[in-house]
Length: 259
Image 1 (cartoon, rainbow, N blue to C red):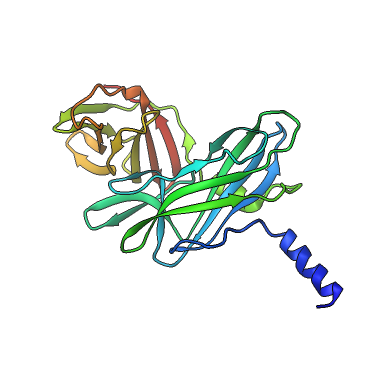
Image 2: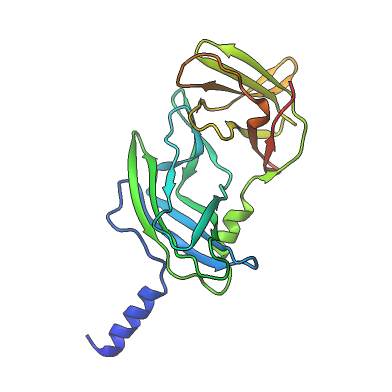
């Protein structure tokens, strides 16, 4: 190999974000897009997953039978905290099961805040997630990022534009006990909603079902079941509920509701 050819190959590899190898079934590539530094000294980056045709992976609150992804950032340097910015998911129905997730490609942006302001942040992530075709399998990834670029990445910016926006709105909800937990029905703000998901913030130990949209006499409602490890009714704080809605006008998140 000539020296010129070697230098061209080395330059091309250096310009490409680090890509995970030994990929699990269902993925064609996995990497951390290195991103850029914002005006506050935070690093804006993203995890990118490319999926094989027919495969899917899950949103932060997957629904009936999905596996929520988990992230370990302890291998990173000068990192204080990570804030994930989840793009609006798709509703994926398989038989009687409803899950929330992504097909084809997921670009998951995040903000990495430094421990020491003004010092660089290096990014290393261990990721555990579920990947599904006809069956679902657990997967593990080890990802590292190259150095941030001087300019914002349009791919990450496009994903950020697809993140549901917080909206202040008073919603009515009804909570009733069921045999193994509680059921919540939240009246939706309008009928042009295609997808809805109810979550319980700060209590990951509570299992949450997929959210169904139902037409009732008093309007259109989003309904989900919440089941604790005790498999019994429990006192649910309705101000911790978070409703994500997706419709023709985009996606929004609404915190809390009124009885």
